Image (cartoon, rainbow, N blue to C red):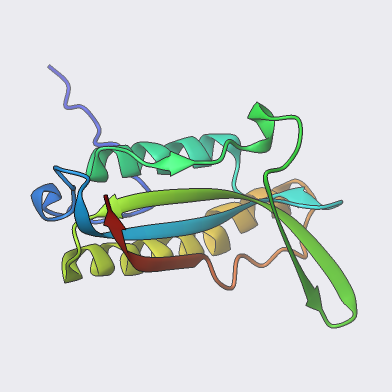
Amino acid sequence: MPKRKRKTFFGQSSYNRSKLQVQNLRGEIYKFSILIPVKEEGRWEIFSYQEIETLAELLDRDFGGSTYTPPLEATQHPLLIGRYRIGKEKVTNTHVRFEVYTQPNNVAIEYFQELKENLENYSRQVIVQRLQESGHATYTGEEQILIEYSLAIIL
C-alpha cells in the first residue's frame, strides 16, 4: 500500500493538542484573533479561498474548531476592511478574521507565534510567486500578519 502523504498546513509544527484544545468553554481561556488579507482593492487576491480553507482545516485539527468570517467568494460584500497608507497612496484590503479559543498557556502563545511567522513567510514565497506569474510583480508579501490574543472569561 502506498504511503499517504501527510497534509502540510503552512509548515506548522505538530503540537500536543491536549495542551491547546479547550475541553469546557467556561472560565478563563485565551482568545486568539487572526486577520488574513484576502484582497487588495483594485489590485490582486492575496490569500485565496483555498488557502483560507486550509487555514481553517489547520485550526480545526489543532483546536477542534474556530470561528471565522467567510471569504468574499461566500458573501456579497466584504465583512472586514482594513485601510492604511503607503506614502501618499491609500490602500484598502479586505480580510478574513479567525477567532480561536485555547487553553491559557505558553504552548498556545508559541503556536501562534510560529503560525504568524509561517503565514508571513508563505506570503513572501508562495503568494509572491503566484502573483508574479500572473503579472503582479510589485507585491512583495505581507510585512505583518496580525495576530492578537486576550484573556477571556466565558460564563
